[in-house]
Amino acid sequence: MRDILKLLSCMLFSFSVAAMEPITPLEAVQDLSLDKVRLGQKLFSDERLSRDNSVSCLSCHDLSINGADEKSLSLGINGKKAVIKTPTVYNTTYNFAQFWDGRSRTLENQVSGPIHNPLEMGSHWGEVIRKLQNDAAIVRSFNTLYDDGLTASNIADAIATFERSLVTVDSDFDRWLKGEENVLSEEAKQGYALFKSYGCISCHQGRNVGGNMYAHMGTFGNYFSDRKLPITKADYGRFNVTGIEEDKYLFKVPSLRLVSLQKYFFHDASESNLESAVKIMAYYQLGRDVNDTDAKLIAKFLQSLVGRHTLLEQR
Ligand code: HEC
Ligand code: HEC
Image 1: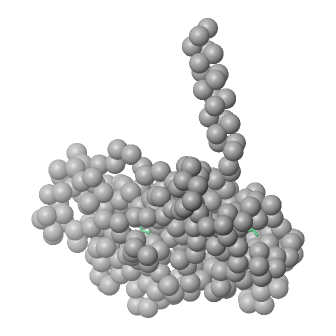
Image 2 (image 1 turned 135 degrees about the vertical axis):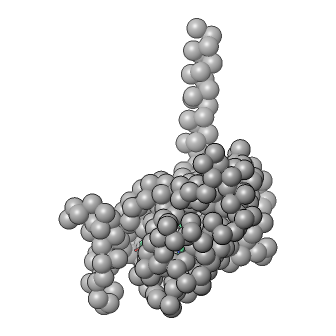
C-alpha cells in the first residue's frame, strides 16, 4: 500500500512539474560509448563516404555554425543542389523522426539516405566499405568496438552514436526553466509568454521546441499559392512517404532550438529574416497578425534557446 501511495505521489509530482511548462530542458544523452562517439565523429567528416571523395556529412552539417550550413540549398557532389533546406544535426536524437517528411524513424536508419542520394554523396555501402577496408586504423577501430567489424550497420551505428552526443545543453532558457531567475532577459521572457499566447506552442513544444509531431504548412491560408514559386515534389512533404492526399504539404514541425543561428528558414529556404519567419508562421499556422514589437520579442525568446556544445562556436 505504501509503495502504491509513493508511486502515486511520485506520478503526481512529475505530472505537476511537467505540466508547469510545455518546454522542458535539454539533457545530454547518458551512457554513450565514448569510443563509438569518437569513431562516429571521424566518419562524420570522412569524405570517402561520397563517390568522388569530395563531400562528407560535415560539408553540409557544419558543427561550428549550427549543425547545418549557411546556404539556402546545400551542395553535394559535382556541385549538385539539394532539393530541400538542410536541417541541423544538433539535438536530432530528440526528434521523433528524421527528415522534413519523417521518412526515417531513427538516426541509424537515416545515415544511408545521404550516402545513396545522388544529389548528396552519390555512393553506396559496397563502395564505402571497399574504401574504408584499405584503412588499417579504421578497420582496427571497428574490430575493437564491434563483434562483426566493419559493416554498413556498424558505420551507421557509430555515426548515430556521435549524433546522439550533439545535444546543446544549458541555454539561457533552460537555465531559467531550472530556476536561475536572472539569466533570461525580460524581452526573452515576454517573447516566451507571446509564443504561448499566440499558440506557437501548440506545435513547437517539448524539449526540442518541435520535432515531436507533423503539421501542414498553411493551416490557415494557402502558403504555396501565395509563395509564387512553382510547387516541387519536396513541397509535398509527408505525402512522398505515405501517398495519402491529406498528407500533402505536411511536414515534421522543426525544432526551434538553434533556429536563430540559421540564415534561411522553412523547408524551401524562402525566408532569410527570423522576425519575418515568425510573422509568416503566425499568419499561415495561426491565422494571426503579429506586429513588429511582438515578432522581435519572440525572436529574442528563440535566441535564448541556443545551448552549448564544445563543437558549436562559443558566442
Ligand atoms: C549535400 C549535403 C548533405 C550531406 C553531404 C549530408 N546531409 Fe544530412 N541532410 C541534408 C539535407 C538537405 C537534409 C534534409 C533532407 C530531407 O529532409 O529530405 C538532411 C537531413 C539530415 C538529417 C535529419 C535531420 C532532421 O531534423 O530531420 C540528419 C540526421 C542528417 N542529415 C545527417 C547526415 C549524415 C550523418 C550525413 C553523412 C553520412 C549527412 N547528413 C550528409 C544535407 C546533407
Ligand atoms: C500548426 C503548427 C504550427 C504552429 C502553430 C506554428 N508552427 Fe512554426 N512551423 C511549423 C511547421 C510545420 C514548420 C515547417 C514549415 C516549412 O518549413 O515549410 C514550422 C517552421 C517554423 C520556423 C522555421 C524553422 C526552420 O527550421 O526553418 C520558425 C522560425 C517557426 N516555425 C516559428 C513559429 C512561431 C514563432 C510560431 C507562432 C507565431 C509558430 N512557428 C507556429 C508548424 C507550426
